[in-house]
Amino acid sequence: MNSLLIDKIFIKEVQDVVLKAGEILLSFLDKKHDYFYKNDGSFATEADLASESFLIKNLKRILPEASFLAEESCNKMDEVESLWRWIIDPLDGTTNFSHGFPYFAVSVALAYKEKPVLGFVYNPNTKEMFFAAEGLGAFLNGKKIRVGNRVEIEKSLVSLVIPCVNKDCLYFQQTVKVLQDTVCSSIRKLGAASLDLAYVAAGKLDASVLKYVYWWDIAAGMVLVQEAGGIICEFDKKVIKSNFSSCLATNVDLVDKFRNLLD
Figure: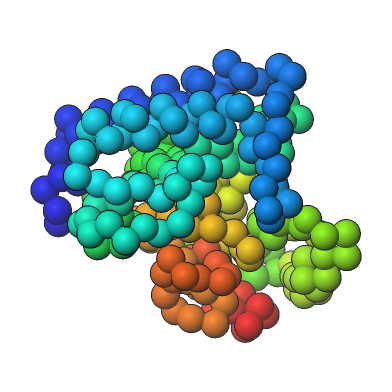
């Protein structure tokens, strides 16, 4: 276990920064927003930018030797040789946020040799702070959490994270049909990947199915799910890395059942 991950002062400093970033988001909530559109059809607001600027400035102060992968300002893997890398989504669930729908989060992960080993996901609306570190377990507001123990796929509560920017959105429709044929109506499209993964880690969702998302969407949630005893992988692979194309998070009893459906 890396000594940094058991440094309580370090962990508290990072948590305080994540908490403050959540407060920054709330200060912009229910106000008129400026929108900045991206090439993939998604958009950012001034809240995304303010949160990310704050996170980078303060996380750099805490761990100066770390590089960054962040959604808005440095969203490509750089060539900097660094053992440590922060992976940041300053506002996961921007569309929800822009509508005042209270399902969005700050997501911050720390990778060691490109493997996420620490993760924070914070929902400022509910004051839920999810935290996990490799070898230490996963926690919600200081209490240990575990993935659910459901074994029947047909009774599962499943979240779906497949961004749909094109009107036809054929893959989304196909995936919904595949899941509905098995899990009926117990499918939710909530709009914030990191929170969905956090709720899988806490046993509130039985599974999350993700496609067309980015490393900053899942890196923190990946640590949460793994440390809560769950499995996170691609539909057709038993592992997941930064160049992933699909993502499934669930428990050990359901993983193969979902993979057989989705592969």
